Each structure stands twice: as structure tokens, then as C-alpha cells.
Image 1 (cartoon, rainbow, N blue to C red):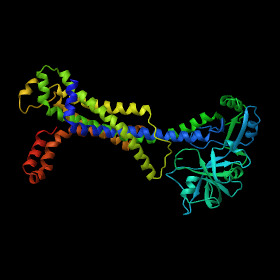
Image 2: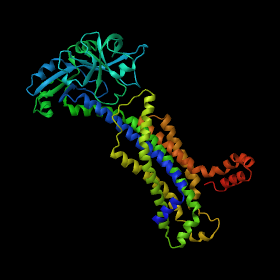
Image 3: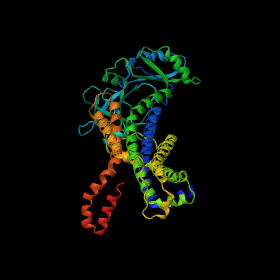
Image 4: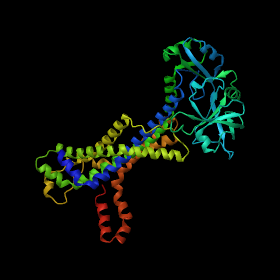
Length: 492
């Protein structure tokens, strides 16, 4: 039976290719979504890893309540206590906030809503804990100087010595002299974020954090582990602060960004699910048509001794092979789709951080399983219909499959499904309750309405075909008349 199924697919190559296309598109959307979001997550992880690569422990404020607001600052005196610990080699405190550049055209420099990041640098301190690299000029040392990232400087055609406007968080625009151009790590992109670097006293005054720090980076003496350093620092920390190893701090920051990207992932996966859902209808309809066309073929197999189970296996194997073939193509097509989505985001100004495409094992497994399972499930109904082909049909001309004993209930079930679907859509759109529940109801209603319309379609094809195909009988002649008659005779 397996050889029969394979020979049947190879004997109808065009139908096989066109049927596979429906699943290819859905699987490509799933694969591309995972590749894109995994790549973005890896890019952010690289950024935070570079940011904390020169330290062994990081001290930050700890939020008392949950939320997305910035962590609180803490007293500057904490730095002296940390420097006095026996396991500490170096420790530097700094400010981290937000500030936006103003271009020559007077408009705020922004890329797809990416933040404008602001940091401080201590002019008299050792720069061994600083993740930034000075490319030209010098670090800011006065209250009217700022260093900026190379990408922003190139985009605004600014060089060392030029003047640029800066809007600090909650403040008004101020003019600064560009003292230096800096670069951050080796990430291909910072996600469109801009970097403004001020000297420490200027940053503290600008963001109203005099006598405070947002972060302290600490390096350990040779032979001291990050865990041992963290345990010692904990003893001198004030309330509402925390200390983590640099690896743990990078992971925490990366995870926080990753949780924010879940919406993008779910949004894109929803489109992939819809494509697969519609593709399953295409598969089921195509296999149903071919089963009807191959009535005599299946009847001959039955006459030769094949059981209904064996005939059913032929159709299911065809669906399995089609699904696996389409899923493999869709899996790799997801690479191109991920690239296309990235370019689309860039076209809208959202330059997402990347370090190279990430192709996770999860992407392979989910893509292959989803595409194959959807196709096999779509082939079940045609496979069951194939088992009802009687052996006597092999010697009859124009033999058709007998209707199911449940066929007479089809229109009533279809109307019931449509009614329930419309109720779900109405509740999702206009009802009260949690947004998540309403969205689920709305999605279920839309998909249910699709199913209901598909079920009721054979009942309305005949009158629609008699009206819509009327021009074909006038333009197409005999061929148009035959097409109209065939559509009305076999609406399924």
C-alpha cells in the first residue's frame, strides 16, 4: 500500500506540488517567526553580555513593586563600602537613564520607537569596567560635553567638535559639544537605540540624582569567584538594592526584553496558524476531489483483495508524505521569510538587534510536527470516504461515492456552527470581561465561522453557480455551459 501511495503521488506531480504549497506557506510562517524572534533575543543577549563582560558583579536598585518603571537609585556612599571589601579589585558607579538627540532638522532622532539611552563616565576613573570603546575624540569631562555612538553620529553627519541638541528624560533640550565618538561591543545593531555619554557629575545633575548611583560594576581580585564576590557584597548593601553576578545580570536583562517580545512572537504565530488552518481545508478538499476521481482505482484495489483499512492507509500515507515534504520546504523557506520580516521592520524604522540567524532545534521539531500533523488530520475524512468505495464500482461508468448516513444532518450542523461562531464573534467584539478571554473567543468565532461557511457552501453553490456562471455560457460557448452544469451537478 505504501508503494501504491508513493506511485500515486509521483503520477500526479502538479497536484502534489500545488497541494503542498498551502502547507509550505503556513509552516514557513511558523519557522520564520521562531527564527526571527530567536535571532532578536540572541541579539539582545549579546548586547547585555557585552555590557557586563568586564565586571564580575553588578549592583542595581531593586523594585519594591512589580512594573516596567526604572529601578530606584541608591546612595553614592555604597561605592566606598564596596571598595573596602577584601575580595573587590575595582568598583565604579554610574548613572543609566534615557535621553534623546535632536537632529539638525530640529526633530528628535528616533528609530522605530527605540529608546535613547544615557550613561555616565567618570573622567578620573579607570575605564577597564567600561564596555564602550572610544573611537575618536575624548571622553566628556565638562558639563557641556557629550559623547555619542558612531551609528547616530554617522546618520546625523556629526563629528567631534560639532554641537548637538539633547533632551534628557523630563527635561528641556540642551546644546552639547560632541567630545567623542564611541562604539558598543560587536552587535550588528543596537535595535535602533542611541547612546549619549556624559561625565558623572553632569549626568547626576541632569537626571536629578545628585549623590546617587543607578549601578555599580565590580571586578573581583584574582582567584575570587563571582559567587563569592556577590556573597560578600550583599553584607554592605542598603535596602532596596540587589547584587548579581555579571552573567546573571545579563540573563535577567535579556529575559526582561524577551518577555516583551512574546507579543510579537504570538502575533506572527497567529498568522502562521491561520495559514495552516486554511491550508488544512485546501488539503482536505483536494484529497476529497481526488478520492472522487479515483473511485474506480480504489474499487479495483478492493476487487483485488485490498481491505477498506488498506485503502484508507493509502490516502493517509499520501497526506503524510505531502505534509512532511511541504513541512521540510516550509522550514527552510522560513529563513527567507525571517529575512524579509527583518527588512520590513527596518523599512518602518525598527532596526532590530541581530548577531546572525538562530536556527534552534525547537524550530525544526515544531515546524515539521505542525505541518505534518495538520496535513494528516486533513486527510482523515477523505481517507474514510475512500473506504466506502464498493468493489463493483470498478466495472461501472460514472460511479460516485455513496453519501454518508450523516449527510442529511449536514446543513443543520453547518447552521448551528455558524450561529455559535457568530455568538463568539459578537462576545469577543462587544462583550465584557478580560481582554485575553475576549480575544480567544473572537479567534474561535472567526475560525468557527470559516468552518461553518465551508460546511454550508455545497448547499449554496448550485444557485450561485446558476447565476454567476451565466456570463460563461454566453462567452465560453459549449465549454462555459459544461462548466456551469458540472458546478451545479457536483457542488461538493
